[in-house]
Image 1 (cartoon, rainbow, N blue to C red):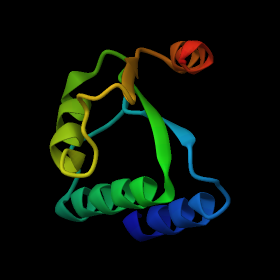
Image 2: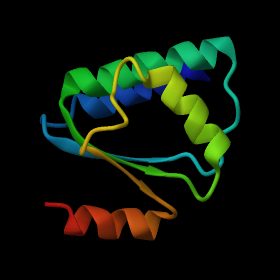
Image 3: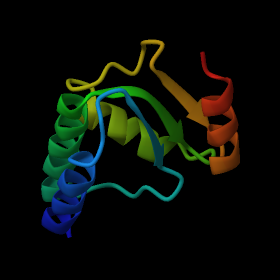
Image 4: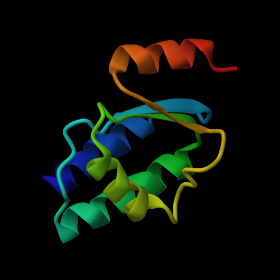
Length: 101
């Protein structure tokens, strides 16, 4: 449920200091409903306002979900800057964070 997810995100973001990193797994992403699309935009804006530093998107080789996500939050986050990277798995994402300078 979108409202529950946004509430949980808000609660988690209130525990974090600006400058945090985000790893998001899109490997099982499915096309979102209109309410889901609005929830993704709202969540992205919440993360931005809370001070996200870097992001790693786990794609698992699935391009469709990532493509929809980029369209949805493209006006909130630029996917073309050096604060966003892509990984095929959680292990790869963890290694990227460890090596990211």
